[in-house]
Image 1: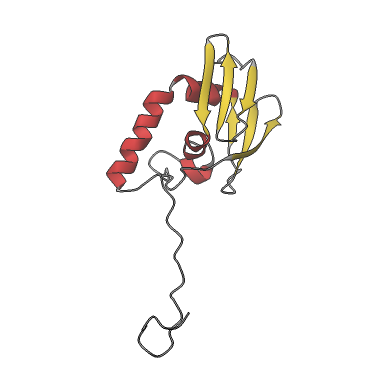
Image 2: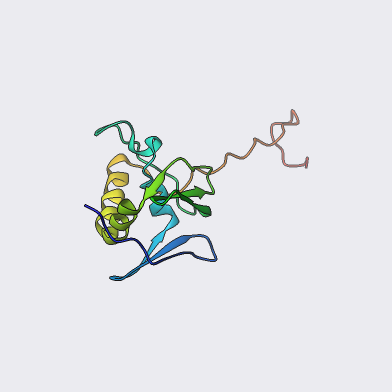
Length: 138
């Protein structure tokens, strides 16, 4: 089935969402949503059952969007991901099925015991001065 093309596409100034405007209305898709549901092989895998749950993507931003021919958008994300081509039909489905797809993603995260938050960066251990960490050295 061929879905309607968006009449307009806007990246929010904060680069945290993409708005698609169709005859049927305006749909704002958060960057995190687009990233975790990327149509790339990295996310979808190579067939049913090979999907890779995306975690730690809260706060990801859209760096750039580019047309890929007349059939898709390529979205460049702040975490370096840029291998998915979002064809017009897939973008339409992402826009019109946002609630169900987002809830499904959140349920999968919960079932996996995973989180939307990135792993905290480990702080280097403080230098030891041979005194057992007496607190007198800076």
